[in-house]
Length: 478
Image (tube, rainbow, N blue to C red; front, side, top):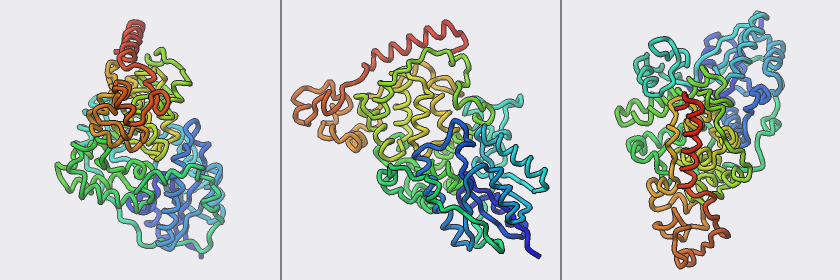
């Protein structure tokens, strides 16, 4: 008599460590069949972008290696998730399917339909949390409604039971008597023409091993200094775990418990994990927000659809060095420092009055850590139309931001070589530099480096006037 088989459907949980779905399958005592299904069409308008697809290829390659080390293998298929699962069930006589939850609106609907269809066929299904510290429906206000402000949300989280201790990675997996056919990873066509890894420097290891390495380094060297260094783009003051967390190559519970052991020194970073949970909380409770403002009155804001200006911003040719450095880092590496993300996003929506959705779309296609929940929260925060958003009158000055957080212009020189010879006094505002300084640095404004595409004070006044006029027409938009 053949032993029972359970399918483990891998999604954004590409690890063996602390994988609740995998552990549930092992408890059944039968064979475990790891499966990955490539079905980007099921993600509707937010299909994985080019940078994400590249990282996904590396993450899947790492998962394959981990499974092989455990004596197993990854079955790769593409097509309708339901049809693939049903076909594998027929081929293997599997009687159970386990997976870890996702929180994107389209995928919640899809997973619910799959669960119902399999249940009708007598197949056991069970889902688990592997992606957040606290489930979105577990954290409620006193009146039972979702939170819209971060600090009370996080304070509430800290009153709940602590996240469970992470589960260990199994050393070996029981395998089926015969293996179903599988596609080769390269057949999915995930690797684009741009080799993002070349620019990503020391982070070429886009596997779970890389996540473990970064966590160890951050825990040992940087977490204590995180509050002072996290806003400095020229130093390695952040964990750089965002992509690994997105793809589930390391669990937030593993990070949480690893850093909690360090006590108060880790509080500032753990709060950032809280922001990540808050983003998923908002996406779950307000599923229209990837395309529509949470504060609905902002749908009528008079944005400017200026394609030429959008293109200059995308290419890092705005004439503001900190903005341009960030946009070039993004294009070359698929990553951008968080402080610089805020400055570049603010420039697009406040200086250029271009809709936040256009910026969200660009980040979605170019960030290796593009995450629908985090991307939506970040852009709506910047535009002032989301939960706990920045006030409309907060317009980041890209010059003073550069002088404050990159005073020696180490970051700017790294990504804008044409300004590398400029002295620190002038590099943040080269258009104000005397001609002899520009000549000595080999800078010809308008030729080797662009002049500012818009004057900061003019842009600030224009934005505040637009918001003031908008508030008169929409009194609730404060």
